[in-house]
Length: 64
Image (cartoon, rainbow, N blue to C red; front, side, top):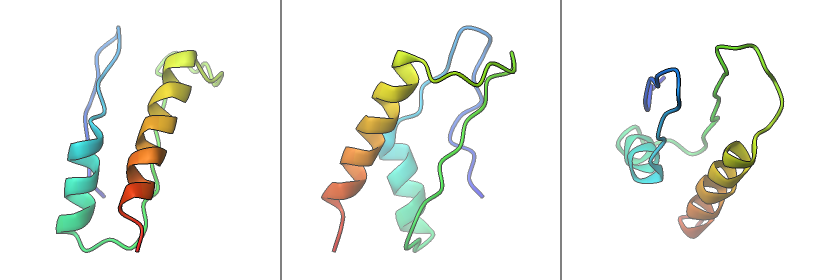
């Protein structure tokens, strides 16, 4: 397990470069990405969706 970032009350930044660098160093063949909302709100925000798409697209570039 690799913790990318622990955010604050207002938000956090999950950098795809950091995520895929850690996966590469671990010789990972796949990833499971998870995040939570301390408030308990399980609704996907627009920012959550954008970040998920950004990471997904970045991951497709490395497919072999």
